[in-house]
Length: 234
Image (cartoon, rainbow, N blue to C red; front, side, top):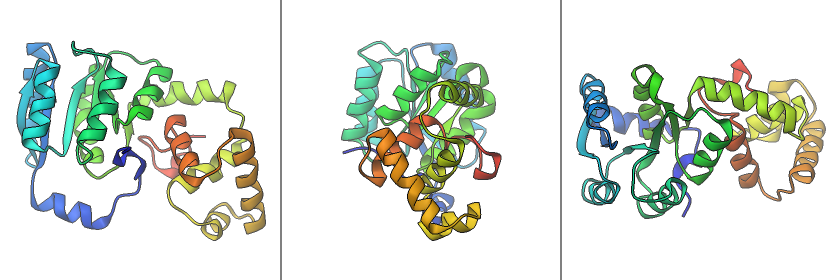
């Protein structure tokens, strides 16, 4: 079963529940110094509880099974198997645990594959002291986070390759955020019929028959990561 990464709009009740108890985190990195640094970073946050650490991928799986963390922070270079397959397997087995990856790889194509595999967050290690805390909090709320430099690269990449128009991307982002056709029409100051036309064009251009397919495409496209709707990712 695909993870909650698709639920990009958080339930207010979830925030209240998280406020009453700490966000439980498992840390995984095969470098002892990095692991120690991440632990110090998270220990400084009153609403976090690091429940386990691991430098070995097999042990990571055991820690997730034993501790049921809200978030797993996973180094993409952990030895022990293909990272994308590992993320998919973890998300299937531990559907209540969000995965935030840490990496030195700023390639937008790889980031897109990681998110498509089920990860909720993509954090560059060089910016972990700035971004990791926010990425974990978002992941615990069922939201996504992608590092700003990667989002910028994704925008540039898709401007060259995306079949959708700027207005279709605006409509797609609002669809993925859970808005109805009348709400989209009001927000974009267009008619409901025009929204319906844009949706039909998107389904045809992308070969996607369902709203869920559009939402997954929006996540891979980077339309919902790190910035608010008003900031305009398209």
